[in-house]
Image (cartoon, rainbow over all chains, first blue to last red; front, side, top):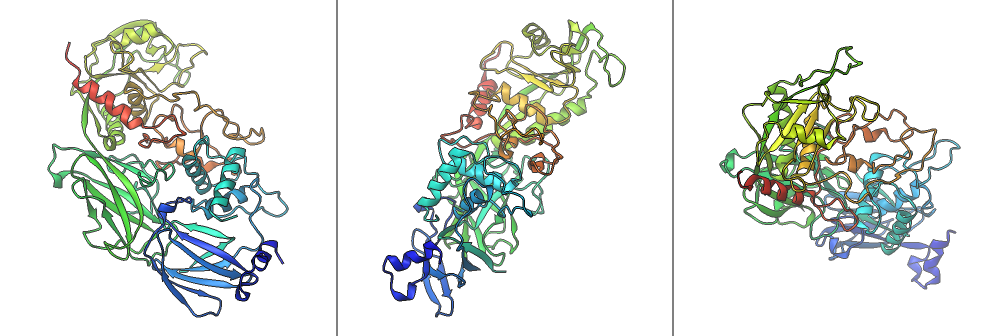
Length: 175
Length: 403
């Protein structure tokens, strides 16, 4: 069992949530974790597994919280759209890898594009170079650096950007 | 079509974003020439939230009746929301701009990319708001719109004859001509392109009806002005100089006839009107094919520079000799390539698929450099608020007293 799934048992959650992880989804006007960016007043319907649907309205933070187990799928109807939510059970890739940077940018809402996948036996691309980066990723990095003084804005996720990105992802509850 | 999300613990969903709209009718097109009605957005980051994400500059020609003013367009792109979701666009305040597309109270189309057009009403700042469900629905995104009233800057075109030692052009085998071969129409075309870039920032270059072709200077080399020679610069900018105007000199070459400043390498040159009130001017060489170069040099004339603090110079990638294009000692990310004052050199083709050939296209066509001036003030970027600088300089120039 992955360590993070065991946490809910250790913290004494009720039985129905054992082996389920708390997942937070924020609907926001802009990326990042500034609370006032949340979209309030969105009506939603949430269905987790085979449970009856739950309806609600987003609070000022734009947050919707659910608990999801491995292999379980949730369906969230909101904003005239349907979001099918699965759990990432293996954890995020390391920050030193470009795909780890992309994952964290995406979870913060920066739209870094498709996660880089090594071809065959090739080693993952390192984050500190811009090789194999795509336009979406570079724009997402520039935007993240612009929002996070005093990072130098160069479109490359070097050590300082990686450190700040990890901090931002943790603050956002994504790590 | 449902949107799949694989989430570890948390995810921020930002449904839409704004982007430049190069094509007048097709919002799916993301690349195209400079247009006064399709401004580049300053979309570096999303903070502070009071600004509201990107910033769009809009020019205002108050001499025109409101209905005769050009429509400015911008695209809205669905990044994380279904095409079927019903979206509306509204303005935060009335009186600064009016949305003309879509029609008042009409939803945006159910497509991934959507076109929004607006018309300037008055100088000022407001926000475009994207709402879900209705015109009073929740605001899901917004963008600041800054309307700049026009400042006219007189431009005087000069095509002087530069006498000196003939230098052979290796391309043609003939000496470089003493006078530019540009026609009046081709000079006007360059100014038109520069105006397409500057209009959203509220600056208009007004070129004199007559291009001055009577001036003569005797310099070292025929047809050449040495960009490293203050004397040559000042000799030429004194020719038929018109006060309180941007005097633009079109010459064959900006070079010194030696390997120190090779031919066909420098496209333009300018000095700041504020720092050099008696001698300021700009030069455009024959090999400057685009009016973007003229716009770039006008930026210098109006007080902005390529690298204000030397922080622009920066090794942006780890150098790998196997991959040309890595380890460049210049700030080089794709956003910076969209900027008017970055482009002090042409974009180089990057044919190696493992590096970043996508940087060859920054939204204006293959290897066409950009035209954006920064509007935002970011704490970590010393090249901010270029618009405020050029507008102040343009205003000073336009109202300077006569001789």
